[in-house]
Picture 1: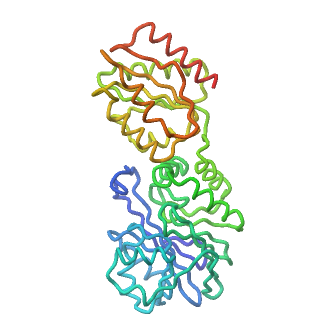
Picture 2 (picture 1 turned 45 degrees about the vertical axis):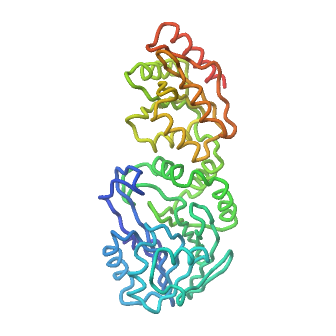
Picture 3 (picture 1 turned 120 degrees about the horizontal axis):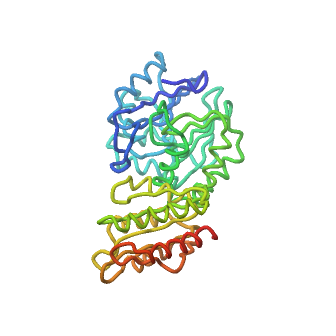
Length: 386
């Protein structure tokens, strides 16, 4: 457990053993499932936790309650990592009311067989709920990142319960940089919904917030402007840093050699930052993170089956699904008899907004030659001029 204030306690669970989140995101330091209890004349629990950590969560909650009952369960988000213990809590506190959006109650019918309707308190934008000294005010946050989401502002202590917003991978006590894992979390989970995140940020701007309590990661209590500014940048799809991200998909090493040579040339020419990723071996979701982080992207890939190597195709589908835009892109292709990678990559880039694709493409015929280095020099110049 962790005290947020004297009357608000985080009873969530640090799951250090979890290595894969949502069946796809690799975790080095586990995951935090946060849940909060507000102690007042009426007691409210803010969300539950994933079913596989229910027992530890219930023990934390029982200790925090110290014999008290739960009057309200506030359901901000119906994703199972936050609603997975709802039925257990309903069994434990049969008089407890459930507070959520109308859309969330519709989803509950899909997840649960228990009678939710007799307990339901549906709330909409701006509605409030008094617990005594604490007053909860609810704001809709549809598609951040599910349609039923609400966030909750506690007026007396100025605490924002932000649902999945401002979360990160890793347990609350993980010794790691917040920004790196929050960025990877944001772009892979919420990245498609930048417009909706921007709408939520406008609502938050009108509030005096002293603490942000997300459903994943640490409670944020200092330098809140820093975190909010990051979300403003990420959700606008503006580049966060100047730099070049080189993502390559190589079979026998020749395309990799060209990618690394370009990195060397860029660094010699004074590029502010150059990051390189092997799409066949490195974490795909970190590649997505870096593509959004930097203002310039280089795609280097082998031609394959009259198209492009599958790892590159997969990467570009990830970017398209997350609304990749507002970047400068350069292409390197390799093909021993009929290079098709660049054409295929250009087709996959179509429809992504405000991309500038540099010409000419660097084409390698099997292995890098001295003339290839000349072309890479020219590409480096074009990238740095832009």
